[in-house]
Image (spheres, rainbow, N blue to C red):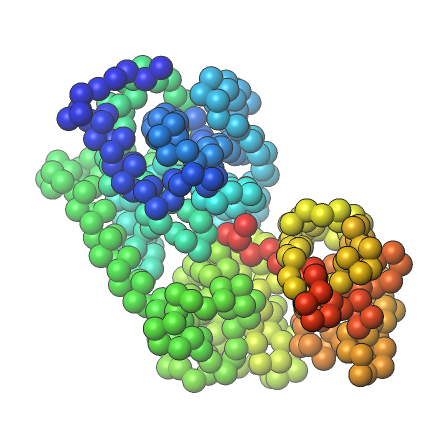
Length: 460
């Protein structure tokens, strides 16, 4: 049990800051998932969230990402299990494989694997324990890498696109350590944090202490600069949204899923080079990709815009993603499991497929599949096998699904991934194409609208 503190104590100030920073997020019925490494920072945040949970009524979960990089990894996972059990916080231990040959370096590859695991959580928000010192280190790292404005913005306190919140970014790590000691908390010390072969550790142990001997509030001032850069990055994002075809003033209301799916070549060709670079960066970020360097970004643009119209374009954009071009648009093709889909739907609002994509089911009057008239309380979900025929328009003949997909401008590499929905043995719904004419709900008749949401990094 945490100790009680007078209202002016540092511990009480931390609790008040957390409550203020989460006031629009930690609402009753909301599910928050803490990225829980078991280290000092996340251990303190776990304790603060448990206290806030009792007064705010949100649902608190935790996830521990097991990288398997340390001989102590199993012991750390067990520590996290025991800690969460004592505090009545459900914990998921997610084992990941870090791709050492990704070309990103071990730090970046581990971070990418960690975020991929966190983004797989079915949650409203992912809560991270980054603090003021982390922000200062990130700014320095990005500065030394020659990053642009978006990189220098470092980490956002709230990232709505990826459902991330960092409520401790204003707090120096020393304040977290004092809280942990005062409350007699135990935490993990990761031995790799002392290894100065890693860039972040080198800055933390060798560079920032020297800077702070001369500039006493360096970490706070660096974090403040990151905040200024974040404002500038927001303006650049708004400009990119306009360049992508979103009307001025409407950038907050457009369909993110639609914008993620493709970026038109014509929108890039209409811009000068700086604005084209800004638009491509924005679109890659919208899809949760690591930002390429300036030369790499220009090479992407050169290939995408300069190749022949019939050229097959395939540009590596990340460890699990490739840029592809089809007709007048750019797409991001992701690595996915080739395991055939064979599932039954029996009433749930959402069904996750083996590749991580989701089918959603929404009851709507006069739209979708006429389930009640057809007596369809169970539907079969299956992969394409080839040769399917489909008739979504009562006034047109039955046609091959292959031709319908081509007509709908769906890129070739996506066509085999689209899940098909069967009623008994009849093809009833093809997401993105429509509902079989004989199975469509009539006006004022209860219907079931079935949508397919491919895997976007950072989507639920």
